[in-house]
Image 1 (cartoon, rainbow, N blue to C red):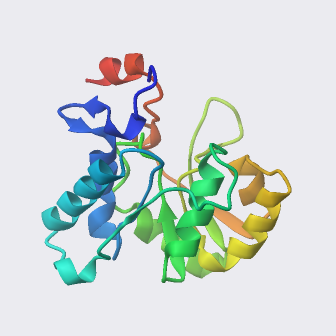
Image 2: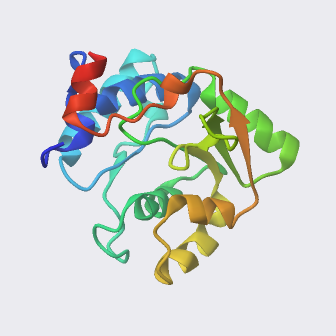
Length: 196
């Protein structure tokens, strides 16, 4: 993204993060954002998403944007954001999604939660079909039970940075979604322009 804050890059007239927030707002009781820069702008996007789904202002935390906790190694990737999110949530479950998936399914959380209830998994990840026999798992998008936080922190302190490795070390399951484009990552300006 040429050094730009990916979540704030424009996609079809709105910041990428705004697309993700507007999809998740009706599916989740509380919205929080993990961001290490432009915190005020992300807070504005979070408040706009809450208003758009007619969530009462007293139902949302007064501050909902969190940089990585200071005890975590700086610039160490999404696992630090996930740990920070688990530490700051007061619910049993946490839904995480990256800022660059603007077309997430509108039944994402319900389907992942149903799978968690059926399997008693601590983490449920969406997956899609791929050109290989193995499905494509979308590791940084998933439903996480907060109780895995201590083990996650232990792994992080001991050098784990790959979200996929961490998920596979937990009690986890997955749900297959038929629309592969729902989980497409916008990882470059070229990708964004190609999808406009």
